[in-house]
Amino acid sequence: MLERIKTSAEAEARSWIADFGCSLASGDAAAVAALFVPDCHWRNLCGISWEIATFSGAGKLADELCQRARKVGASGLDVDTELLVPRRAVLAGQEVIEAIFRFETANGPAIGVVRLLPSSDAAPKAWTLSTLLDVDRISATKSGNIEPATHNRDFAKQNWLEQRRTETAFEGREPDVLVVGGGHAGISAAVELKRLGLDTLVIDRQQRVGDNWRLRYHGLKLHNKTPVNHLRYMPFPPNWPDYIPKDKIANWLEAYVESMEVNFWTDTVFEGAEYNGSTQTWMARIQRGNGSVRLLYPKHIVMATSVSGTPNIPTIPTIEKFVGKVLHSSQFAAGAQWRGKSVVVMGTGTSAHDICQELQANGADVTMVQRSPTLVVNVDPSAQLYDKTYLGNGPPVEVRDLLNASVPLEVVKASHRLITREVRELDAPLLSRLERAGFRLEFGEDGTGWPLKFRTRGGGYYFNVGCSELIADGKIRLIQASDIRQFVGDGLLLGDGSTLQADLVVLATGYKGQDHIVGSLFGAEVAARVGSIWGFDADTQELRNMWSRTKQPGLWFTGGSFSQCRIYSRFLALQVDAIEHGRLDKAS
Image 1 (cartoon, rainbow, N blue to C red):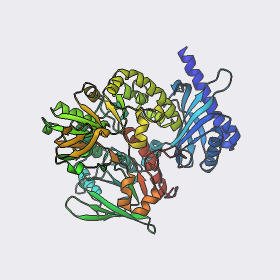
Image 2 (image 1 turned 45 degrees about the horizontal axis):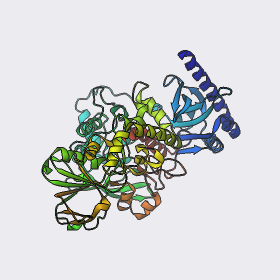
Image 3 (image 1 turned 90 degrees about the vertical axis):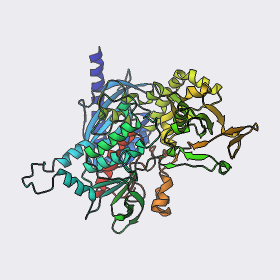
Image 4 (image 1 turned 60 degrees about the vertical axis):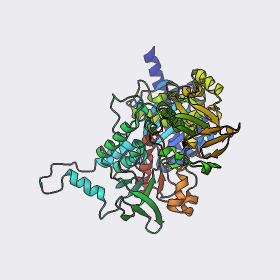
């Protein structure tokens, strides 16, 4: 019976893909539209034309597909059973037939993912379609033209280590691409750019690769499971824990940079850059750790300073009256030094909860201040349900990435609403206890949970690893910001006239996005030209200015989770490569 279902799914997928290929080749938009349900979506990731954009509705989808396919072609469509045998699955509560297919375009080999809605009395029609260029096949073609390394018969010439030092020094040459920020986002982009043959340099202000993780608070771990967070080409070992500690991930990033031969300058500050339209290059000002200043002239700059990289320190009336210590959460290192002290933590996101929990464990008297309702979800299993594409047995992570990236925004929302309902039922005992303690809860826009909160505002939620129970049990005091009348020298004067003593105030008030620093580094004109970064664009249904051309030639942005950087860095690299080979204009 199982084999019959598999064969049926494959036969239906093959039939649909054959019809789709013929209709697309003929440029018949009406025939293409007839293959889709009315409420359908096509997500293009540089697959047919260079845009990263989603188109919805059968008529618009068909028109856009045919218009773009006429320019680049889309031939040789065929099911790829090596990556995935077409199968029946469930997405956002809908039974679908899921298939991966390959095809060729003028821009290179490409991959598609389609999900068909089966019908008992008619041929299935497509609900979602995604198309993307195949960076692995494109890279393999490029590397196939490079002569393989052989033994150097002249032992007086530079050995590998000397060659690496020369390559990294960039003496007498300029990088094609300068990547600003050496966390997982910048490193992932650099690896993909180098693989396509682009001379790339990563710079970071920290003293050591991985310090952006290594130097954070004592108890930090990743809050989603290891299978979600692999790096391309060098997955984590199978004996790694479910949740990776900060120092372990920091050391792995350092090893990854070494193994992937990423050109990386630590202890280096990016002071800003100016674009020369005549030469189509940047003049970037770089300050090295020894105080020297160097000018670099890359063709492209990739900003990888995190979607939440600049501390957000809000204006808090009367805080200047407080005589104790005030730290932003990014400056908080460890709770042990505050044993026996009274600490107020302002904020209710993940960092605020983790810092409160660490302080309480080290014997501090801790008060959390809630400024706005916050989404709380148990780290396991509830928070992981949104990532179930990557968990359990199944295809390799490369295939899971294809499936994950193929889901358009509106379907993601529908799926996450269902998951959030399930999560609220699972977590109901904890959530009711929190509400009784006075904690104000919310569950994401239209009940879509935490992942879309991350993609719209970069935070505003907490994966519970024990702090919620401490709040519910009264072991961590909770007050609302509205309870505070003003700051005083030794703490907070509350609305009831009492004083809450404090030795330390931690501002766990989040971070500002990348658009905050564009003006200071590139000038007001460039900032206005680029516009907002991160958060969804209503027209494209994609994150604004991420991994794609901006209106400023040669300026790119990357960031986000490990899985986002693993998936989307390749499309950034493909576009930069296309520009360098004259196949794509520099600006959007």
